[in-house]
Amino acid sequence: MKPVLSALYARARSAPTGTRYYEPSDSSYERCVGLAWCSACSEYSGAMVYVPRGEQLTDVLADLPGPERERLARSEVKLLDYLDRLARRGAWPPSPQS
Figure (cartoon, rainbow, N blue to C red):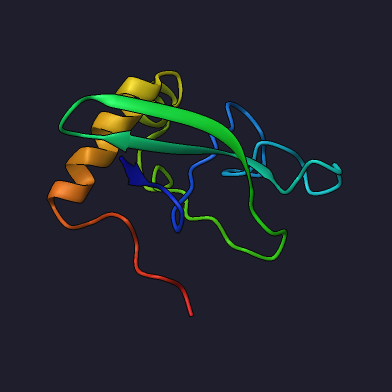
């Protein structure tokens, strides 16, 4: 399985914080949804993972139009398919931020 560490995407359905599931004021803010998957065998798993408060998460859906972003956020399978396409093009995972 390909670990998703540097570019965790927390499926924040409508949270205004974007890629975090919880609001910054919430004690659970550092808990995010982490995904790992294998493109070859089409298996994936998700779990709550710890991401330090100061670590900036990359929202890989930020540049998409609203309807497409919502469509991908509603389905883990579609989201992983989208991430696979980005990876095949060399556009994901993003390079570490300095």
